[in-house]
Image (cartoon, rainbow, N blue to C red; front, side, top):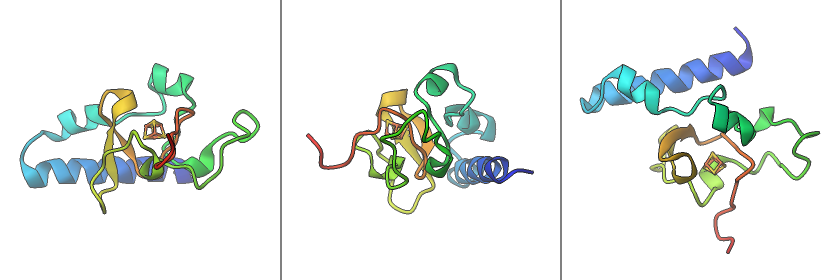
Length: 108
Ligand code: SF4
């Protein structure tokens, strides 16, 4: 299993466990809310589950400090591995994710 696949699996496992713990959503429902790199729109935005996996040649302004947890459009709870992204219709993204619509916290 590659590093990226392992990370994806862990993120999905944590999301599924959280849903069961709170009893609000089934694992399948929660999994559908998680944005994947295979989603066509996410792909067009260069979305990656792990900011360290971003193609620097394609996105030369990207830095590894840019990640979903530092983005204005992320509204996850502190300590949670995933949180909603308003840019992607509140679908869940990992704290270490990234897309080319990254907007740093505190920027106008
Ligand atoms: S808009 Fe921000 S929070 Fe949403 S995926 Fe892109 S970098 Fe992450």
